[in-house]
Image (cartoon, rainbow, N blue to C red):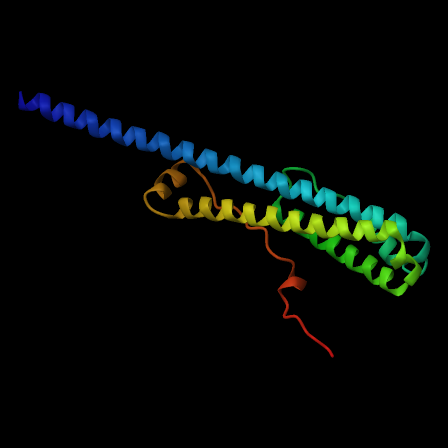
Length: 185
């Protein structure tokens, strides 16, 4: 009779361990789906941002004759493919930011262009897209943070190592946005 109890106890322990392993693997997979979903949101926001940049470029093109370098860069920019590494998406985001800044400088230099309703609407839409992109980045980084914690914290790290779940890269802020803001009066 004691052998039966020991066998049942061992069977119960084995069942609990197997249940925990399956649950942990499924948890990792759910986290990866959330990361993919939030990365897709970044892709959508980057695409909208690039489209707005292209529209602003078209609207400002007549005023930008001397800005040939900016024109060429905007035209040559290409959206990274879905599934591209996060570093490539970050570089694209940085390029679009530089393009938007260059176009905004041109808009400021030409009062007629600045007064254009089309440019005004595009600038407002750009602000909205920027807010959406920031929100998408925060969600992505939050999902990556939670996932990375599970990858490195015991006991889930045992499953992560066994199933080769690796840490994911965060979407970092552009270098120019990390600099201290300077006020010149």
